Each structure stands twice: as structure tokens, then as C-alpha cells.
Length: 409
Image 1 (cartoon, rainbow, N blue to C red):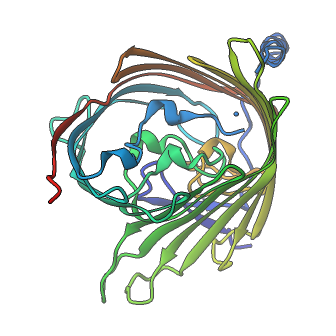
Image 2 (cartoon, one colour):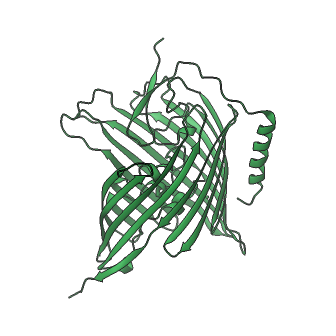
Image 3 (tube, one colour):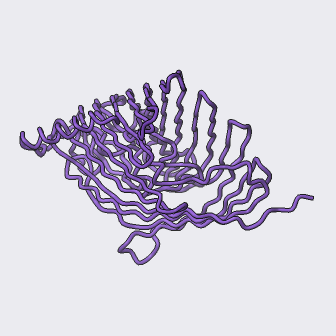
């Protein structure tokens, strides 16, 4: 029987590997019974804490939100993100590594009236230990306030963690690895409904190119069924992400491929009165995977998953615990820990995955434009008895200066 394979993007989104689905899985690493009991007890203790479904990584990144009061003004802004994150991953689905580096994005922002803003600048990335910059890219963004509720962005988008997509669908590590998204985006905000839909064009092609066209289409939507009723809120989140590789005008000899992930669920949240806790939220989500072109190479073209989380949020602290169960689930832009296939070992495939997850994020405003973040994450593979964990420190500087205001004749 010929092995089946799938092309999976690596963490930078640039290269792919082939994964066989007919080979047997390697023997998993097993935790001793006492260690399992300790891990389970810790998770249960965290669940007893008064603990948003998607973890709010926006605290580690800040998009310059549109301000209609800044009409005809010119600003200079600096976004500086200094990060250290260590991934202690030893299981079958992805390898551990360490990231230590800096992002610097100086830019000018000009408001042409109170409905259009142009941002022009550059994004520079440097990893510690490398002599040169790892990445230098332009920032060109036109942000338009079409109506009081609808914004359109062309160029550099309000992307990555600001989409608020579940981790099994969109890996929050893109905040470090590929923070810039470029394309077209529409954002709708009203009291009852929020929707963010975008297309991130990752690789452009011309006639005769030997590389494929690549883009990602996404939708992140939340409809509020109940709001501000005795401080309770009930919402329905719907998320969609489709990753496309192909293009008719390219000479790329691999078949066109389109893989899609969808999630729909319920969120129940409460804002306690006279408490230091800002919000307690429980989220239940059903996830799906579908190979739209049926050319992934795997014997399955559909998959499903279940993800439930419990969160507590305060002004400085976020805590989250969760459970994830999946069958034949693949997400080309999602975290590798949630996949049914390995991103580095071509013989690893598991039909079923079961994970217990826990996250902590502490942020502190050191000064008006300076923020410190400390995080810890844990993923326990219930089938393999394998604990994966990560921790990190972030320091963000986000100052902006008013330069001038255009005189109105």
C-alpha cells in the first residue's frame, strides 16, 4: 500500500514537509502514575479558581486603533517588541526551541480628515545570535472608517493575535514569527455583533513563476445573544480559516491545495460586581477540518475537534484551563500541538488526540507606553502521558508623538 502524505507548513509558514499516514506511531513517552496525579491535581486546582474562549494575546501587541478625533493630524509612532520564549516540547508532534529577539516598527500616521488614515513605515526583526536583521519589510496601510460601525484596511492589516482565533486554528506564535499580514480586511463593530474578515496575501506570483500563490482567508465573528443582563453575557463565536496554495499562472508542479478550518461555539461570561476580577468566561467550541480540493494526500479529507476552556481575567492577570479532543484534525495555520500529524516526523499520525491545557499571562504597565508581559503555558497529552510547556517574557514600548496638524482653509 502506498503511503499517503500531506504538505504541512512549518512555523514560519515558508517550507513544507510530507507526512505519511500509513506508518505506525512511535511508542509514546509515558509519565509515571504519581506525576500524572500531580498534573491532574494542578489542573483541578486551577479550575477551582474563579477563571475569555480565546486567550487574549492582544496584551502582548498593540495596533494603533483608529481615532476620529485626530483628523488632519500627523504622528510618528514606534512599536518595539522585545521577546524571549522557550518551548520545552519533547513529544511527537513538534520540536522545542527558543526564540530571543526584537521587533522594531517606526512609522508615520496621517489622518486625512476623520475617516481615512495612512500609515507608512518599516518592520525590522532581529533574533539574538544573528549578525543581520532576519526581516526588513515595509508597512503601508490605508485604514478607512466607512461607517460608524465598519472599517476597511488595505495593505498592512490589524492581524495575528487581534483576530482572536482559537489556537488549534491559528497559532498565536505568529506574533513572533510572522507578525505582519498584508491584504484586505473589513472589521464590523456594533453592540450586538463583531466581525473581522480578511485575506492575508502571503506569496504573489507572476506568469511562469516556479513558486505557488499563497494566501489565507479568515473570518472571526461573535454575535451576542444576551448582554448586560445582570452582568451576564452569552455569545456565539464563529471562526473560519482557509489556507490556499496554488495559482493558475504558476509553473509550480505540485497540485493546488485548499485546506479549511471552522469553529462554532458558545461563550458564557460574567463580570462580577465589586470584585477585582474583570471577567469569568466559559467557552465550548466545535471545530472542523476539510480538504476542499481533496489533494492533501491523507486518507481522510475531513476531521473534527472539541475544545472547551475556562478563563479568569483581571486588570493584570489571565488564567485559562481547557480540554481538547480531536479526530483526524489538521490545521495548516494552527498550533502543531493540536494536530493529528507531526510537523517534523514523517511517520507520526494519530487519529485521536486528547490534551489538557493551561495558560497564564501577567502584564504590568511599567509606564504609559511601556508594558511588561510574563507567560507560562502547559499542554498535557492525555494519551501519551507527555507534558509540553513553554514560558516567556515580553517587553513592549509603544510611544507616539504628535508632529503637526494640517491647516484647514
